Amino acid sequence: MLTAIGRRIKRIENQIDSAARERWAKDCNCFAFVSLFGGNLAEFEAEMIKMCPVHGFRRLQHPILIVNGGPNDPNYSRIRELIDRYETHYAEYDRRRQMQRDVINNWSI
Image (cartoon, rainbow, N blue to C red):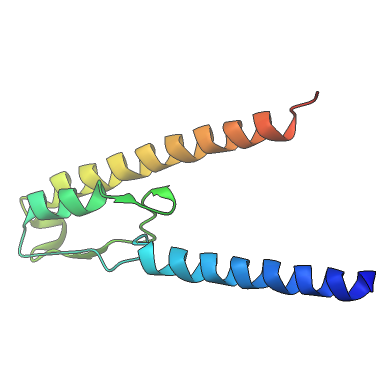
């Protein structure tokens, strides 16, 4: 009898977990395609500072850059600056998040 109840509870937990993961997957915008084409730096910067409703700081794996003149393009240094700033902000966010986890994990009563 107890094992049947335990199996039902486990099944319900799995259903709740699955529903939560589906909801998160729908809301997450971390790995959305972010590109820069035609030198619209303001639009690119706006994409880089968006927050993810699931994870907080948006995780852009590798922004896709299409720069007409490569390193000779007048916007190239500004683009590199934006990407470097994003990577710095993300590293700081990740560091703070890890510190919070450490505090929670080391919490003792």
